[in-house]
Structure formats: C-alpha cells, structure tokens
Length: 193
Image 1: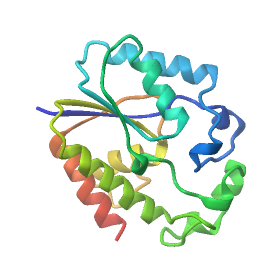
Image 2 (image 1 turned 90 degrees about the horizontal axis):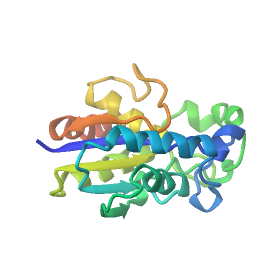
Image 3 (image 1 turned 180 degrees about the horizontal axis):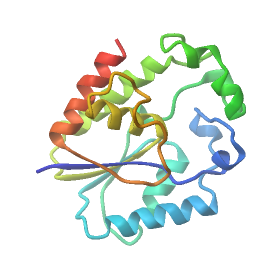
Image 4 (image 1 turned 45 degrees about the vertical axis):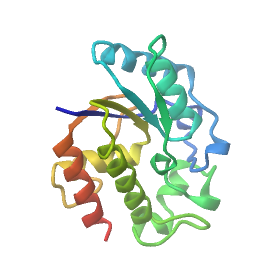
C-alpha cells in the first residue's frame, strides 16, 4: 500500500502577524513555534520509512521538511504547484483584508495580479496527480493550508472545498492511501470546473 502524508507547514512569522503571503520571495520562514511544530511532526513520523519528501518552494515549507526530517537521509523535491495561493498585489495585506477581497467570494475571479481560487485548486490537483504517478511507497508532502484542506474535503467526497473540514492546523499529518489521494484529485477537478 502506498501512503501520502500531507501536512501544512509549521507556524510562520507571517502567520503570527496575520499577514497573507502568496510569493515565496516575501516569505519570512518559520517562527520559533513553527520549528517546534515541525520537530513534533518529525517525531510523529519517526517510525515511518519516508521515501521522498516533497514541498512547495516557500521557505516555511522547506524549513518544515528540514526540521521534521532532521538526521534522516531522505530525498527531497520541490513542486511549485504546491505553493500557496498566488494572490498578486494582495501579498502582504492582513488576513482580514484578504478575507474581504472580492476574489474570496468568487472562486473564478482572480486576485489582483494573481490567480483565482479555482486556478489554484486545479494546480494542486496537478501536483497531487504527479505524486500519484511516482513510485515511492511513502511520500511526505509539506505545503500550505489550502491544498491540504482541499485534499481532505475532496477525498471525503464533499461538495465544498472548505467543508466540513474548515481549518488546517500547522504541521499536522493527514494520511492518504493511493485511492484516497486519487479521489481527491478527481473531486478537486470537479469542484474547480
């Protein structure tokens, strides 16, 4: 049986400031609490023989992988399609301002100079599909809140990306076997069409 462990990155500096970030060049990395969360994720995964670690290119995701797998010689790979929502000119605004943007209310409306929520969802489905095509028995995937939440809800057959699972805790593992991640890909694509 193949296993995919999906996790959101540890708590970041920008999470603590309640600032949104969709550009990896503006990512300030993990806060001390996030490093501790990533180390705890590593302890939870210590008995699992991880064959590949995949993350987005955001420093907060890469640092989470590094802290979680410290001392383990595991191949690593970056996948830009697992990156956070590309929010364009909203990068650096408060979380409240982000939640009140028009693109949050209309999944097909792109953020200013960015992508739409449905564009991001299709990008996540593409990344998960590429992982499914790989041969590794156990893959750790560290990315962001949206791709993890979308995968969990879609694998369960939800009619919504944000329900019933609404919040994605930092550095918490979610386990998918191959059929579950495949269901998630199909459902994400259906919901984003």
